[in-house]
Amino acid sequence: MTTFNDSGTTSNQVLSSQNIFDEISSAVSKLEPILPITPEQRQLLLLKFNWDIESLKNSIQEYADTNTFLIENDVCPENTVSVLKKSECDVCCSKLMVLGLRCQHMACLNCWSKYLTAKIKNKQCMLSCFGCGMLISNEILGNFLRSPKLKITHRKLIKYSYMNSDSSLAWCNRKCGMAVRRSDKDTVICSCGSTFCFLCRSDAHYPATCRQLRLWEKENLNTDNFDGMALYWVSLNTRECPRCSVPIQKNGGCNHMTCTGCRYEYCWFCSGNWNFHFDGCKQ
Image 1: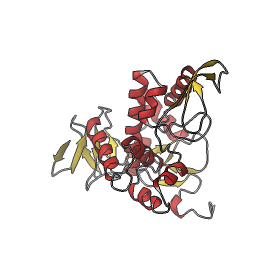
Image 2 (image 1 turned 180 degrees about the vertical axis):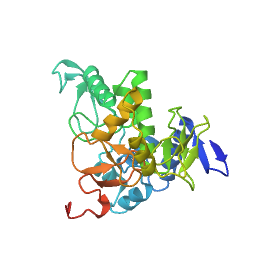
Image 3 (image 1 turned 90 degrees about the vertical axis):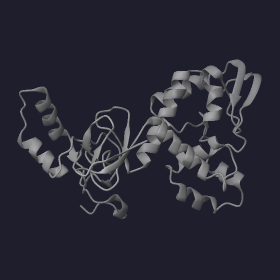
Image 4 (image 1 turned 45 degrees about the horizontal axis):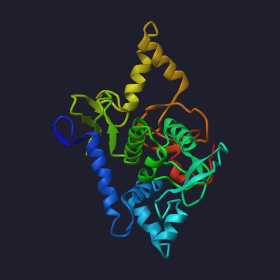
């Protein structure tokens, strides 16, 4: 972990992938005194609660015992796999060795592998049983998935989930693989040398605001080159985030939007803060 301090910009931390995984391990360890279960089970619960430790702690208090809490949150208390040497696969109906969780939805290794491969390729980090919502921990995943590459991909998805839950973290805009944690200003520096705006991920543009930068780009469009055409397409097919002015494209679903830049949650239709959108859109 590197800390940069530049009087013209800001003091911020730069984190490697290992630094991020260390933070994940630290978050998992913090729950050990109140959840005497495996680290893999605690990580599943953090995923389920979007890495909100306080919310998870408050939820635990509502249950009389740990097992009930785990089952209600789709986490297998035993964290083990059931194996039947020769039985019918619930998916392909072949008579083979089948595996399953405590829910007893049993499938052969090939069907489990195909199912989980599709989930991971679809960028799902929270994996569940094919027949119900019972979650699959990293420890159990190794019994169902033989591909080392997919296991690495799944580990990366967990890292991205943690990153997306922390509004003080952002990936470097040069895609160097490092993450930056903002401290007190919007302009941050990565260890690769990139100086960029934390809110909109554009190259540093202080003292201009993100909105002023977007307006300048629109006024200086040159559709005779590729970059100009790209900006022109963006101007036609997106709307700006009401907080940081990052261009957002809606590709379906409801009007509840979350900005990928500043993580502001708002209504697509009226641009109002989603947290105060209780009675639906007023417009």
